[in-house]
Image (cartoon, rainbow, N blue to C red; front, side):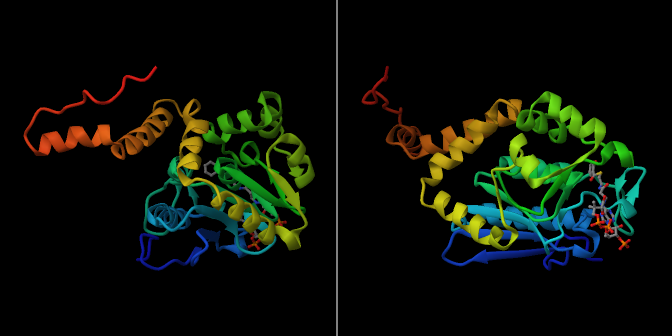
Length: 272
Ligand code: 2NE
């Protein structure tokens, strides 16, 4: 059975603008307001992995098919006592792994939101680096109404974005918020007329792509480091190692090892 492991995509549309440096990942279940099932999440994960590995890609757009919804969260029809289950499979909460994947991806991910971003779909936009919202966008959590919650990034990142009082309001009352309310709360970067949504998002992508990929990579990991604890520090530290491998000093260690000689670090300054 096609469980989302590949090679085809059904629940996701994955596109790359050749020569532009932009990948676009679209959740493609508009008849269910782009609710995700485990298969959808597996396909999203595969697309994000591809965009990460492709050195020609510098920015990734995450969006939903159509204008009615970005994503309405987990498909409630598939909810089981152990998560969400595709036919013939066990329950999963694999969207939590996807959230981590987006946070750790060393390239900016932009949520392009038209219509509803609700429940687990709202959390997906929050874990993206930037959110460009159409004027018809609606944001909110429903967890406490439908017997669910995200006490991980869905709570901690929300509290960082909108502040602890507003985060409690969003979760405890489970209200919906308009694009302009979301803008005032700091949930999104900009609100634009729906007909300009894609154009505005591409404009933001192009501005980012003009800048240093390494600076952006390190800044993304730095901006996440404190909140992500040891994992955040590890991501940032990995960037330090990556940069060190490109230096003469780093290379001297490896070369000496390969030449079976003692490394000579004497010429490298101990900078203040
Ligand atoms: C999103 C919203 C507000 C849209 O309302 P509306 O009126 O525009 O559309 P409608 O008619 O409700 O939905 C159209 C069709 O999509 C299905 C509906 O059941 C309906 O199907 P039909 O009646 O036409 O057959 N649909 C929409 N969202 C769905 C969903 N999430 N699962 C299954 N089917 C869905 C409105 O549709 C809405 O409130 N949707 C539910 C939002 C929700 O409660 N999401 C789950 C939150 S919990 C979660 O995502 C989660 C978590 O908390 C922790 C871990 C992982 C996930």
